[in-house]
Amino acid sequence: MTAQISIEQCGRRIEALCHDLVGTIFSAIKIVVWFHLPAGLTANNTKKKMSFVMGNGPSLKSDFHVIERVRSGIDLFAVNDFALSQEFTILKPNYYILNDPFYWIEGLAPDLEHKRSKLFAALCAASWEITLLVPLEMKKAAAVIEPKISDNMIKPVYYNRTPLTGFLWFQRAAAGMNLGLPSGQNVLLAAIYLAIRLKYKKIIIWGADHSFHEEIRVTEDNVLNLKQEHFDDMDNCEAKPYSRCFVNIIPLQVHELFSVWARAFKGYWDLSAFARKQGCEIYNASFKSYIDAFPRLTNSEVLALFQ
Image (cartoon, rainbow, N blue to C red; front, side, top):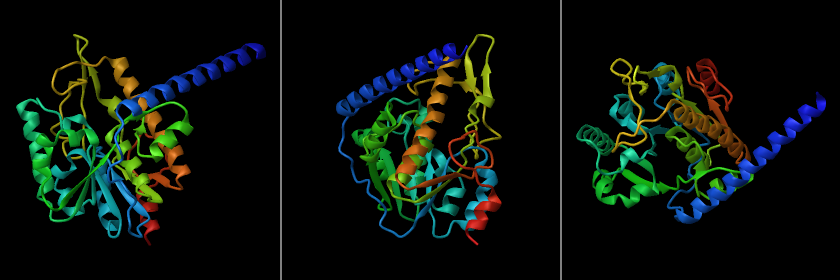
């Protein structure tokens, strides 16, 4: 029995080694093929050591009162469609992160194009300075994007979003040089990574529910539907076919979706290791969250930090 276990353990180690080796090779190839010089992403020059990073999960609604109470003097990161909420003008985030091609690709359906235009209009209506952190692909889509962020209060700064896989030492080195993001990337992962790159020593995340699997529905025709709830649309959100593309409807299968989510959750563990190397502490203060890579904080524990 012991010999069998040893053989199984040896097999798993060899499999993991091969997986990391292949991932490293492919990541290196992607970096070379998609290489862009890091553009403007430099450490913050203030004395602020802490930042808040907000996802848009439903639990964010339960935490607004705490964030607002301790917001003063803390740099705040917001993502995706947060600017369309009334809390945008209340909390006044300093940093705003976009990571999804939805925000710069052409050929969107009219309703999606209208939604995107509303977001950029809301950002440009801000009365405070915002650093807009966006992938370099967005710079290539200047004809689509730049006229919409031409306001003087908006400063676009570009980063590389090449997905990094393979050995952890390789991921840390590449991420440290702004050559990419940990694999499984989503906008919250990107926002946390950028906060680390900006040299914050303590990061508290909110609205990181990641409870997507609770809202999966499969129709009688085996079409995967997903209800993607956010804090500001919980009452009006409907389950819709989940597609891998905004332009052409290419539905995902259930196992593909769980594979995407698995990479995201693994990405948080990789990000946690990267943060420790950078001397950064990350805490998850979300009222509800399935992310298990960061220590949790309750609202009372967050308030105690500022007393």
